[in-house]
Image (cartoon, rainbow, N blue to C red; front, side):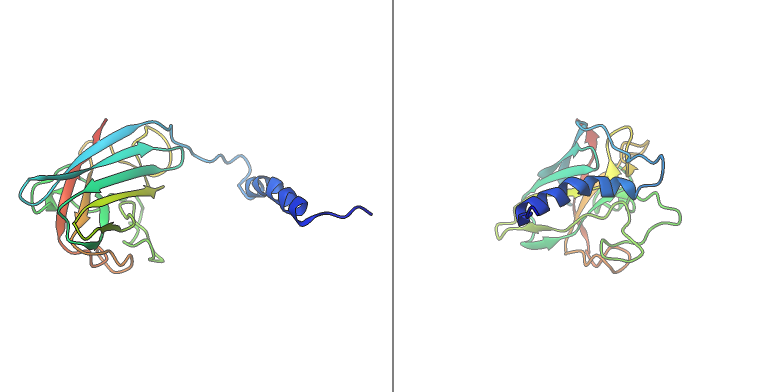
Length: 189
């Protein structure tokens, strides 16, 4: 009898994993994928209209990667959301509510059993000098013509908003994230 090493057993199991995942899909179903490569950008401004950073959006096959670079924030955690209107007039309520296409609308919060809504993103952290360099990823929004998630280049555009406080990812309507302190209108690159 031939013995199987633990490494060989692990490699065999890993080789079968993709087949097991495909077997669980409905017959004839295909995973929706966006066309990678679409690009967008938003100049972030504060409540006085001063430029405080930028957000860069890159479409991947299964979601949207967002790189956020900002200065002038209060040190600590800040909630970040994608809002439904591409307008940033202080105090940034002009950006509207979060993007959300669910029927009925999903509840706010990445940790909410009834959520998340399509505009929910992970928190970002500002360093002691108020600067942020972060990347977040979402499968619930897209800038490509096709694929999963809310399409952000609709007739009234979209905006990315940074809040004064951290988002607790459960409470309504915005997880206790507080005032909108920075905003950027999203535009195709």
